[in-house]
Image 1 (cartoon, one colour):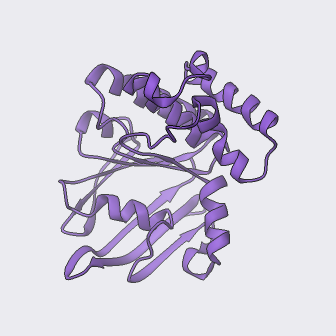
Image 2 (cartoon, helix red, strand yellow):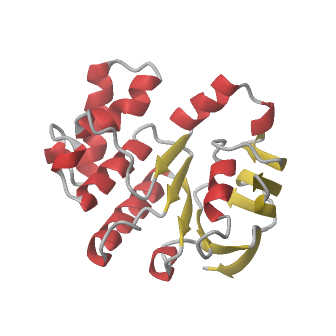
Length: 230
């Protein structure tokens, strides 16, 4: 794990997690600095997605600690962790996980609506982010009416609409062809750089990891830093 400094934002230390008799994490650790893009790589079943879920407070580790901006996630109340995931954290998953019954603009506005923002204000900001991601013309369409690449751009807009401090991206290009994958990564990275958000990027593709500042490999539930890009 990289050395901590004053810019440290998110730290997972000595994380262990098993599902039944199967260990997923075995002492894994990861440190993320403010504004840094970190690629977490590894083969299928290595524990990289479990590591992301623990860092994001979606899954509680069996042991070890996760701290965000100096706060221990385990010591927080459930509702406070939920609020953290709605505001300070953004999420992009492999298949977008958009709500099919909602329009694209309603999907993007959803984190703000859940946080109590009025509909008109939330959807106005959602359209601003959709414009940045070049999909504002799809606001009235439902996810099933747009292409996979377009849906993933909508998902990125949803992840960034609250201007989070960390974006967790789990195989964000895994369901896309290489052309759309490159476009999605460019837009995700450029948008994160613009807002100063950190990105934890889970991928098994070297071309996707190349967009990061630093690469970490997860193997057999343990982490190893493999590259630091200057």
